[in-house]
Length: 223
Image (cartoon, rainbow, N blue to C red; front, side, top):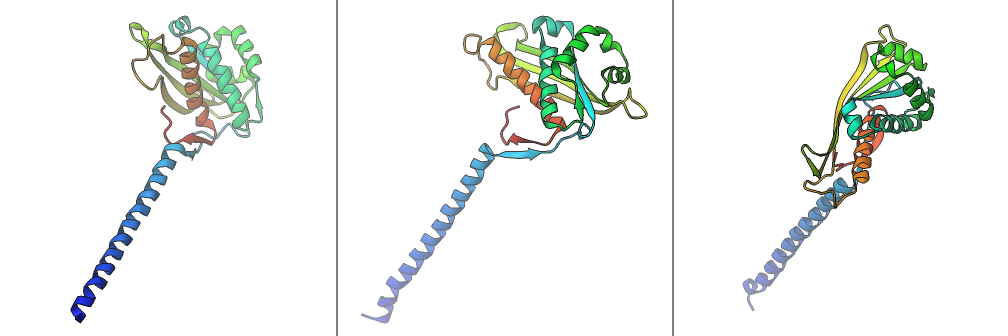
């Protein structure tokens, strides 16, 4: 056997080894990429508060909704008031907050508060930070179609600081919108109305509350 004939198997072996090595690298790279994509789909990220002025101060939340919204979905303003107020008491580190039951009682017994200057509302409630949520849309169905669920809720969140030089001027403002369900065409026979209403309220509560404290959010949150 000549030297030339002996080297061919060796060259073939080297080429095969390099090919397998490259394939192995591709497989490892794909595996790492798959793990990263899986984490992106299932993981969470820390999101900082947009307004941090509640911590170390007294605060409360007041919510308004027009008669049409309340007529179609009774109790919407009270439900969002209680949920957001409770959430911020637990997470935003205020020095004082009005318990939700007491807050709703005061607002119910003082219906003229909606027309009062915001500084006066804060003074009436005895707080340094007043969060005003104006619900401008809250519906469960497609417009004109009561059989298809197409929930949508929009609001404007405004913060007033009663201990500032201008207690009636907002120091922070944010418009928000959430929807539910996440797929179109779902009918009344497929999801109960109470479930649609509850989830839409919960999503709106989350988006309002998360403005005021650092929190974890899913990387693929649908709203």
